[in-house]
Image (cartoon, rainbow, N blue to C red; front, top):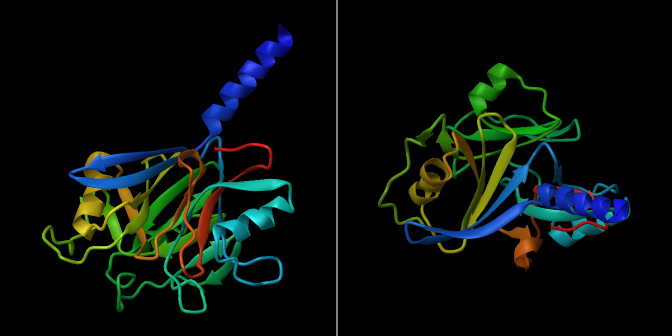
Amino acid sequence: MKTAAFLLLASFASAAQATECREETYQGDSYTICEVDLVTEELRLFLRDDQGDILGSFWAVDAALAEQGKSLGFAMNAGMYHEDRAPVGYYLEDGVEAQRVISNAGPGNFGLLPNGVLCLRDGRANVIETLTFLALEPECVSATQSGPMLVIDGALHPRFLKDSTSRYIRNGVGTTADGLRAVFVISNNVVNFYQFGSLFRDHLELPNALYFDGNVSRVRAPALGRDDIGFSSLGPIIGVVKDAASSD
């Protein structure tokens, strides 16, 4: 009886720690949504392997983790990158800075201010607008900068147009006010920024959300049987690290 009770409790604990991924339709558009509990799950950023080579794919990250007796659960591309896959904006991985914070306006979506930073700390994660991030100087374990912000303190980015014809498969992340939950989203059909931002603000009710990328967007969601490959390697990747024996 004690053994059975232990196994039952272990099963409940495993279920509680698994990333919750689901597909939802909002205002006629389809999305894959994955929620990570920062209290029970380990969320990490990945860019290069031990030899300094770009990892570039979910399978490469999983293979690198396997050497440590770990495995990759949920994962997503996590910020814009140059042709050599180096991050466009601020990138910090396990306390090591690979790129400084970029605070000035510039070309492309990244430079459409305000942009922001996803800051990972022990047991929490927060999306923070870049100038606020510089003012607060939070002690992040890892961080990635991207842009534009989708939602800033409950408001949509001021440059978003409801009838914009710029539509792509897009992905991004939002965080709860207490930082205990991070919600990652990829659209399953093309959407504009206004539609994507509205999902985070009005449907998911998240106070801050950050755009990761479009067109090259990919997700790994084992619970849904999804593991996007794509036609080219990625830059920064974010994912949940698990013991090799566990799964989503």
